[in-house]
Amino acid sequence: GKSALVSLAVTCVCVTDAKDMKHRLGFLLQKSDSCDYSSSQGKKEKISSSHRISQEEVRKWADSLENLIHHDRGLAAFRAFLKSEYSEENIEFWVSCEDYKKTKSPAKLSPKARKIYDEFISVQATKEVNLDSCTREKTSHNMLEPTLSCFDEAQRKIFTLMEKDSYRRFLKSPYYLDLVSPPGAGCGPENCKRSHTHTLDCNSNIISQCA
Figure 1 (spheres, helix red, strand yellow):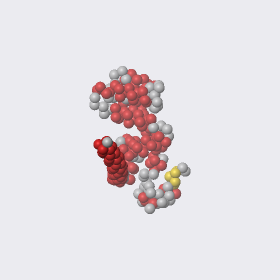
Figure 2 (cartoon, rainbow, N blue to C red; figure 1 turned 135 degrees about the horizontal axis):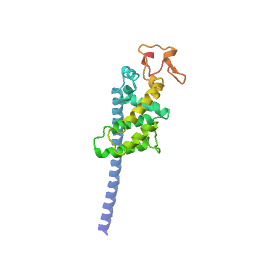
Figure 3 (cartoon, helix red, strand yellow; figure 1 turned 90 degrees about the vertical axis):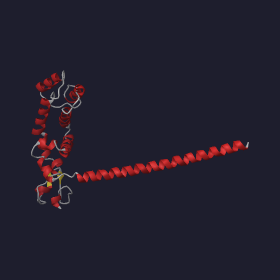
Figure 4 (tube, rainbow, N blue to C red; figure 1 turned 180 degrees about the vertical axis):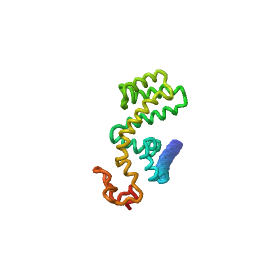
């Protein structure tokens, strides 16, 4: 009888200790996650502050579409603009082609080429880009034996399309104008009011010259 009571008591103590230990571990894990989150947030803030883009860099984007989309921040701004116009498939296709041309393994060429073709060029493409029938047929023929250059012509056509159309609108949009302003510009209507849909005043954080 006594041994049974002792055994029961020991079991209760073990269960209690186990629950207590589980509670402590849970608390420590939560604390660790909190610390990791704080640490990651701090790193993000440091990264964003150390990667501030200069006005000179932003102004270079207006020199050519090539300058714009070969700059990470420029590409992100242009992509956001195209998304607002529901035509982001053009830049997504261009980026996919750039990535495709960096493929080193011959075995990966065919599946990657097929994915790009199905997504952007085929008749059933979910993000079909605007290509003339001749270029579309030629690209389709290239799918028989995909090479690193099989999308080159289609990519050039889409680049030219963006260059003549959406790129020019981008340079007149808040997506670009909010990032650039002439040095020493005042706060006159011509500088602060960029468009009828987007007004920048002298308190704007975007234009430092208006401070």
